[in-house]
Length: 165
Image 1 (tube, rainbow, N blue to C red):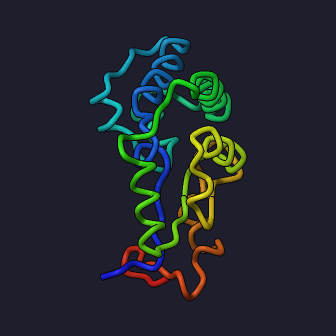
Image 2 (image 1 turned 180 degrees about the horizontal axis):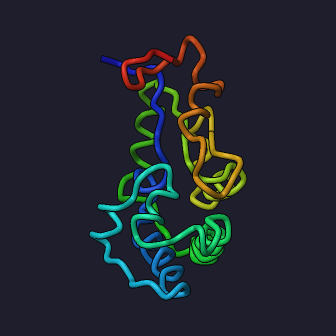
């Protein structure tokens, strides 16, 4: 069966950024007197909304705001982004999907401006019909974007949790 349109996730799917995420979390944890986590811990606690991940590892947002802590995380992540690579064979896969006649989009919980920049850095923007990120640094609103984006038009509808969009 040929797919008309593929919607990719960015972080962890195309971008191999798990270790920088662990380092970013650990930097915040240490700065706030909490214990570091392992790669395995990170993979087991990470969830959406992202604030729940922070709560699971011990942050108390009655003491320190989620906004402040997440901005700390984003600053460290951005400073170290140049060291993050795509997963193996991503460019080849994107090129192959295009050559088969399917269009592609990215849906990310990453900030839209940062996402645009990241795709340019990795030289893969040209493969995507739609590049859809959020308007904040808190990874909020990703699924809502899918429902309201141009990628959800009639010709490119997807099945999400049993609901055709």
